[in-house]
Length: 200
Length: 261
Image (cartoon, rainbow over the protein chains, first blue to last red):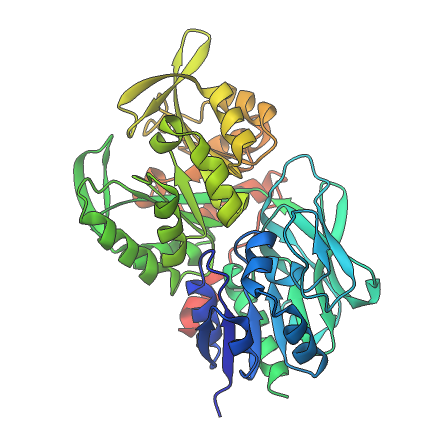
């Protein structure tokens, strides 16, 4: 059966490429503006556009319900801001995040911010990165996650001396600070890997 | 490490890619969706659509073009041209642009930068600054390079960044279309003045030009158009020259993917 992926729309930007990237990997998508409705999907994707405040507002108090669903094993992929919102809070302002991962979101310490462009990703052996050796992925971020538990970090990147979590995982929930849907062929592979893991 | 970028710019009018000099003698060179995909396969790090449609109805066509492109393009897409309001920014982002570049409207209404950045994040707002040399400085021109403003290009770029733009798309009007190299001094001045990435545009005619602007020019990215559209060279070729000269470029990986489709 084709898995149904619920994409949470914060109302702040481009979901087109992401939705297509999921669909070319063989899943169907449904976009929801009410995050509660995404929770009945087979997997949840938190996209990466907007500001932390936009996303926190869009959660509209559903953060606890999302966290519980993730605790119960709902597969989830958070991209960029969608990864950040999995944490507790952000220097960017706005309400609390989902709080599924301990830690906070802080401004990058580089001289030139946003961190914009293709950067090397030092990946471990998480199945999310199967078939993506020497990964170079596309980033567009001013903030990064500082996980309270470094064991959750599955990949690292470095920018102007600041080493930060490129990807995290807890249980069946993954987050990438880069944009797989904008990272050409290897990025699409990562999305396909997520869907494969989600179907297990 | 962060890789220097090669950005390919396509002029789009009424849903077609056109080519010409300074908005005149335009001729149709193809379908934007197909050309953007071809440049992804060639190793372009980003694609820019500059919409030069004059008519109001053209906006709907542009949104449709962006939508269709975003469905098959899996590298970042920036769209600019005729963006007048925060809602215009939102409409383009929703249609599938990853970044939106704003030019004349910012000069008219600088607070637009902060509004757009607050709503969508700085990383998707590009300030497009067109400058022409005048005396010791560079004067900002708006409306596709036609109207002189009272702004100094270096100061204006800095103000755009301060107000929330996450990237500066800096075009030298003097060099635009010349293929004699980027305006290194302008690029250097702006890059050293702002703390956001600078995309240098105007004058790129060879791999050597790209190398210079990415090194001594201080640019994070180099924009190319004519030499690629005319088939003088390819992104792959330019990247292999730069790699041989010690630059860490992202290798192209699209060819394999397009054959899978």
